[in-house]
View 1 (spheres, helix red, strand yellow):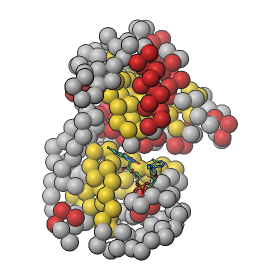
View 2 (tube, rainbow, N blue to C red):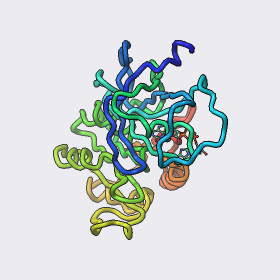
View 3 (cartoon, rainbow, N blue to C red):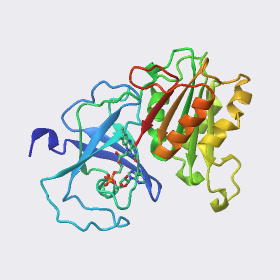
View 4 (cartoon, protein in one colour):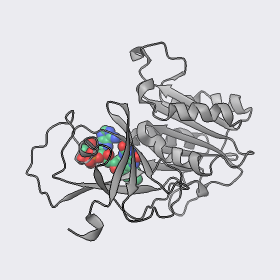
Length: 271
Ligand SMILES: Cc1cc2nc3c(=O)[nH]c(=O)nc-3n(C[C@H](O)[C@H](O)[C@H](O)COP(=O)(O)OP(=O)(O)OC[C@H]3O[C@@H](n4cnc5c(N)ncnc54)[C@H](O)[C@@H]3O)c2cc1C
């Protein structure tokens, strides 16, 4: 087995957020976490011979024990944390890697690339611009890294997370984000659920898609400022349909997507 494909890390924590969402912490074995920027991703890998979790769909193919399955995952932990790398992962029942990740327990081995990469970082936005971080599902992971690293260091900059999920129990990190909102004056958290009729107790937060929360102009009211391409940068992460729709919406308001050589105020990471 090639050296870089050895299972070089150990699972040190598994937290079940809902039956299909976990937070998992991975610690390198015999190597150090490299310097990285909040918003970047690592590649996790396991062999095809690794077992699948029981609630995944069975795989109907011949297993090659020498083949590694590799997928990218955004880092949710702080860039200052040198003990472990945290990931927030959703189960794709028919998928190749996630059913194997969901079968892992504390103490199991996993592979993680020793270098992290990615362009979805906050240095693309000017230091004094408002930052609106919009995500669906596990798309909130890179924002957790940003917030836990340096995103809240500037008391003059306003920062918000608009996080959408089917239901409140799928809103990973909601406790930490609510706590941040209560202790950091320039931080706002707007969680929204698209299926409020399923809630066990009535949901008091936003309802609908993240795009609708942006359109409601709740942030403008809360911050007493009209958010525009002049004063705000918007980050988008998660479901590709949400990203396409939100880009269209923002472009109709004068925002420009930051892409290639074009500098703009919309930064998107599609999975
Ligand atoms: C830069 C980057 C960062 C990423 N970060 C994360 C992260 O932090 N957390 C995370 O959970 N995923 C993340 N992903 C997605 C991840 O890389 C895998 O694609 C995902 O976990 C599915 O892997 P799989 O092997 O189980 O499924 P696959 O065997 O690759 O896919 C099976 C099918 O499921 C579809 N599919 C893929 N993802 C989903 C999904 N989320 N919901 C429904 N259907 C899906 C695919 O289109 C495909 O048709 C990231 C992807 C990229 C490119």
